[in-house]
Image 1 (cartoon, rainbow, N blue to C red):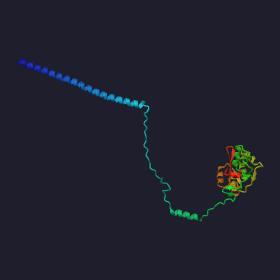
Image 2: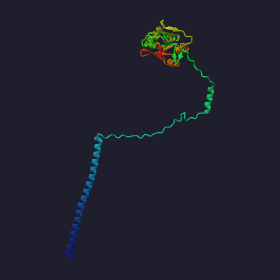
Image 3: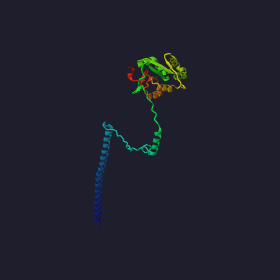
Image 4: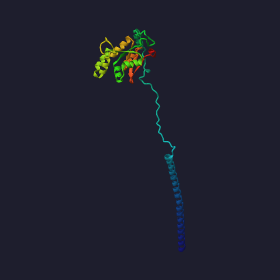
Length: 258
């Protein structure tokens, strides 16, 4: 009996070892296959990612037709709003307007009478020989441009010219000092006629404007901007000025020199 039991125990041990080896080998073989499958799957994913990155990088860096991305800012479209200080929003008082109208009713508008020699702003008093009154700025600019005043005026107007200088202009030139001594010598030439002034002071602009309004038979030669603005308001008064080394005239009709 003892020998049979030993044989049975040995057989059981042999079967257990065989089963254990079989199970272990199967686990090892199938586990290896599973591990290889997972490894290959991971490698394919990584390879696909790397390939896609490489393709996109090639397209981005080497494709000549690929444009740059521009970030467009979204600008808010604001609605137009009227300024709160606009006159259209202010309520006009009808009472104030009526009061102002009543005040202006009593006032008489003064209309400056137009000279009878002016017909459609054509001054019939302007005819050869032309009478020209000189201003201080015109004399200084003609000296700078080295233009003979009498010769330049006669060449421009194609006629004889009578040059006039007022006492105010001579007094202004004397006040300016030695710098304008050459201009004073020019004014002492006997060819320049002298006009006496009855007013006080030495301001020449007011004197010239008053003379022209009283008798519109003069051409005013000046380079003063303010005096030009004042003279343009008087109809029928031509303005002669020096520019670019020559004389020019404005507001003189072409028919007057025929």
